[in-house]
Image 1 (cartoon, rainbow, N blue to C red):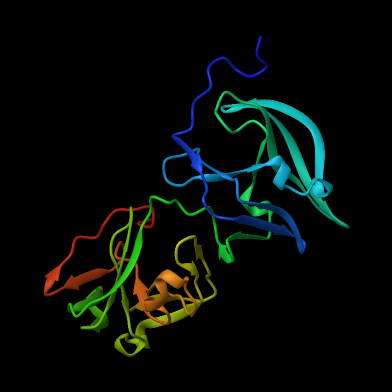
Image 2: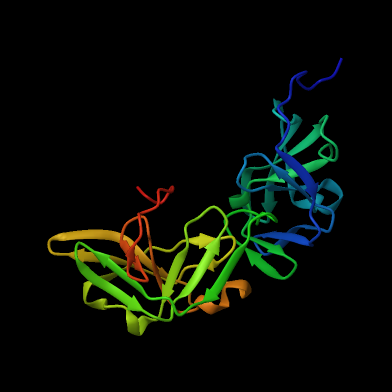
Length: 255
């Protein structure tokens, strides 16, 4: 009789990763593979599953704990480099009915310091091969308002179209009225765009709306046209495009 559950919920999709994947911890390369798998554990993006042969065994710490998970029987592993260690860093699937998963490790993203696809760093989670992000220059007229205040106005925006998100309008700094903007310490990262280098809140009278605008000074290669430009959350401001006020979209950023 099999050691893993008889009824295992299958992943939404599994396919090979055609790119070299590497990750580091405490300055050491933990994994380096050209044979990773994309495994969709949830609908929106995949996780990397790494063949054990492509992981540095000397850095793994067997935590002597096995359990039954939705994809099979797995053993827990930590990481150790010198005096530094991280527990619960990965799980090794020792048995699974899903093709290719047995013998692979699934690492917690934040357990590793840096992840790379080929020689480009990836942030937050693996990029889905089915998500497209395009940054297109435009001459459409865009105006950003909040509580009747005009925050920005442009006839040369860069429009960013990203699968699953509303269109974002990136505007030149000279087209933004900084009188109403206050810089914050917030930083965020995106697998497709990179790491932000600035956020601004908007003050309208006595009210402060936190973190409504952001910029990427050094975006990913694909998003180079937005470098240094400023975008606002459509979900929280009024966008007037070619004279037409757009409805505020509802996304996970709305709240």
